[in-house]
Image 1 (cartoon, rainbow, N blue to C red):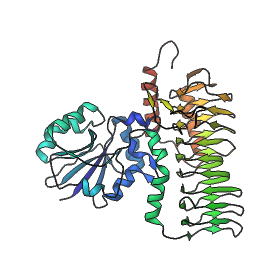
Image 2 (tube, rainbow, N blue to C red):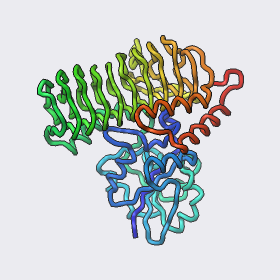
Image 3 (cartoon, rainbow, N blue to C red):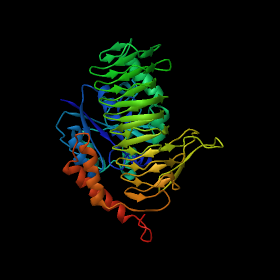
Image 4 (cartoon, one colour):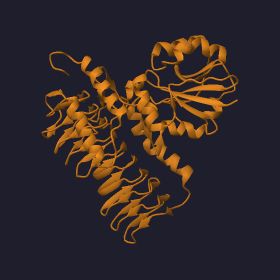
Length: 423
């Protein structure tokens, strides 16, 4: 007998656009790790399986090496289905476990998890295979015993950003009890280490750098470089092989692998492979992979009247209830020099903005090409060629499965666009 966890995405994945345009929500970075990795760490003795929209499965399996959308149910195995949006608090396994079958755990009416025996699994199997559809979750709630649990779910993408400082403090508090220097620390660097600082193997911290952990710990992964005249304030997580090229990094930032960052960045999450070498402000934002921000690209994260920011997802506009909200930028987005982004701006996957000045649209659809005022569809062949060029600069390749996914996504997006504008 073995315990198997199936991490699924539900019908709220669009609340995390544009980052979930090409990935399930549990592949988002929060603190020091992906949401999926946090779940796996809490259930370390269980086999992890993933469920997602069918078009995402080949790329997801390629990137994770895990079983995706595959059901290999064996007699006597126990199966727990867990929502990938769940807040991964330490008490999660004690409140949601394998011991009770044919139950659905809910919080505020939303499905957090469910566990079924073989008989109900077979009967409900068609529903289980497409949990990203709301009607299937409603059937589960009607068919199984409901148990309310005090375990919340992330509801919108900005929550990952606003809660990131506290998540970083919690995660690094579990890992670090004192300052540890495993890399090369220039004696002319300044450490203000009221909280622990970790510098990983082969990491380099130059002279003239200030590492200030008074507001929270700092964790610098192996191979990362912090260049001179960088002020890095905690809590902060700097991913493997990333480079900070001067400037001020503050307020709870998490950078994934191979990011290149300069200028001023505050309370921002980047999945990885960002190119932001130059000056410009980026605050209270979430960026995907392979984003290139031209020199002086700057976003607003606070309205002049200090009122809550509304975020336009395209099909809906949502009041965030937050006064500090920056930009949400999908994978492979490019901005030209001097680009200015409004509070709550959403730049869709693969969009390319040039010409400088204010981007008048707060929601730029995926695969758009334009000057910030008017846009046309980005030709897929040009997009693919550009993506391959950019990835090669970091010794990465666009896989066949990724290219196939991108072509499928642009076809789906084109079919949904207005005939008169193409957007």
